Amino acid sequence: MSTRGPAGTAGDLGTIVAAGASAVLVGFLGFPLAALVLRVPPGELIRRLLDPALLEALRLSLITSVAATVVVVALGIPIAYLLATRDFPGKRLLEVLIELPMVLPPTVAGVGLLLAFGRQGLAGGALDAVGISVPFTTLAVVVAQVFVAAPFFVSATRAGLSEVDPRYLDAAATLRSSPSRTLLRVMLPLAFPSLLAGAAMTWARALGEFGATITFAGNMPGVTQTMPLAVYIALQSDLDAAVAMSVLLLALSLGVLLAVRLAAPELTPLGARARAASR
Amino acid sequence: MLELRVVSRRGEFALDVAFEAPAGATTVIVGESGAGKTSLLRLAAGLDQPESGRIRLDDEVLVDPGAGIAVPAWRRDVGYVAQDYALFPHLTVAQNVAFGLDAKRIGRGEIESRVAKTLRRARIGELARRRPAMLSGGQQQRAALARALVLDPRLLLLDEPLAALDLQTRRQVRGELRDLLRDLGCVTLYVTHSPLEALLFGDRIVVMENGRVTQIGTRDDLLRHPRSRYVAALMGTNLLAGRVPRSGAGRVQTADGEVSVSDPGGPGEVFLAVDPGQITIHPQAPEGSAQNVFVGPILELAPEPPTGDRVRVVLGTHPALVAEVTREAVAALSLHEGMLVHASFKATGIRTYR
Image 1 (cartoon, each protein chain N blue to C red):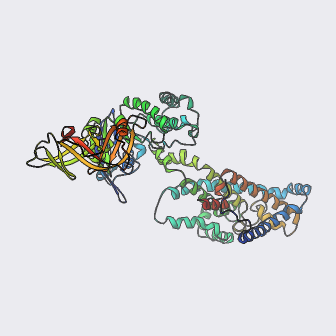
Image 2 (tube, helix red, strand yellow; image 1 turned 180 degrees about the vertical axis):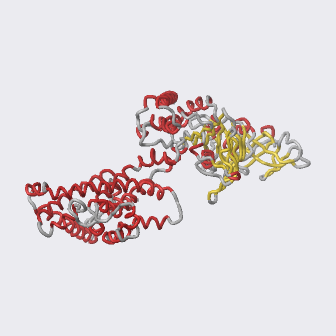
Image 3 (cartoon, helix red, strand yellow; image 1 turned 30 degrees about the horizontal axis):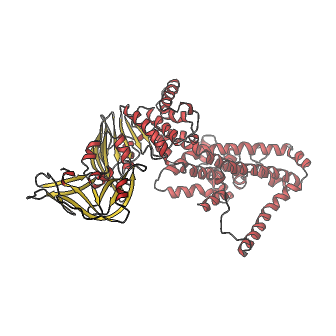
């Protein structure tokens, strides 16, 4: 791709200011990450990563975040399809509602979940009657993760589905394909990079979930203590253990972001902006 | 037999069309872009719904808003080839062709043999495992046609099937497509803006202008008796509309003056068609009588065909006329664009019809 913008911006004051400000921000974002990585020497880091308590938290984190992602994908595809293909009254409101968890403070989400599904909550009695108790269980961890991470998958998938060229949908319809078959055979395969990116972002968000989890699920090692919670607890007694776990989470997050960039560059927030600007 | 009568409105544009199309023949729908040809095909395919009217294919009513009938596209026995072919980019050619058969719940083995047979017939058997992005325009056109025909539709809809091809490929595919369509037993609607394709493919030709049908007929009907200036221009002839007065004596009154006609018939409205070859061009006012002479500038000189020895002369006379002369005549009279000339035609050179 060629360089955009007017020629001869080299000596322009605005360009110099922008470059300076960018350097400050990049340094600010990179500095703590570098501090994390530099704190513990590699040998010590590996020994720390093999600590049974850490592995326990890691195991719980992986299980819950993958479970949450599966739930979000299963429930997210239908609603993304409806939002992408249909117009109905209240659609705007529904969109706002679905995106709300993205900006809602996670602790607020946790309190909400507690008031809805807790023992004293609105649905607590009904759940109790069928022998289900959600709060402070591994299930609660998954519920909290689904709540905060679902919007990432739904919005990416919705965007991907609405970008499928309608010519292909027309072609499918004239080839005896029912709308649901067209979704499965044409729309989902063509939007697959978006689905993958959405699922990856959802998984990463679920993996990093802290506020809603500690509020709604508590902090019990082996049951509800996921990695981010373990990091927070370790910080109060054993800094190097906290750092080891943090480095691991950093590596996972970075890996996901890189994978998404490769699969569907336009779906990461900065990529989306760049594409919008180039139109 | 397809019986189609639809009224549909899209903002400012209104489509109001009725015609019938027989099975085992190609009905060409010809018109300029914006005439509503694609809208019409989409209604027949079921991709859009009309406000009112009725579409009937054999004994089955596909659409009748008045009776609350609207068979969705995917339940219609229709094949549709879009102008840009719309092959599924994530599937191979064979998978594209099998797509409609899969939906029909036929056995694996039969699907494979029908796909292979259709690909061979379309002469793209060796491309079965390719993705559409790897195909040339002509190959994509064949794959799209194969994908529609493998289902043995009762109604085949072709939207400008040759428009996306380059000139050389178009010539080659044109002949093949013509042979293929001739052997089909279904109703075929073929949309084009090209008069040449209309004449080449159309057993019957439906002319559309501004969302309405202005003439329906065979090639010969249209060539010999165009009923609008657009059809006349399409067929490369000149059309004048006029009326024969009560005491005619071989004169017809048109909007641009009187025209001498050898046998105008009784009083009433008439069409006068003058073939371009009947028109003579003179640098000065011609001698003699019983001739119709119109004065105007030469607007355009276009060799016809582009490398041929005939030249079409577009004249800014009233009425506007197109003449056809030889290259030698252009040189001898030193005709050039902008030159003021006299165009004449004999009373006997006019076809008169009502």
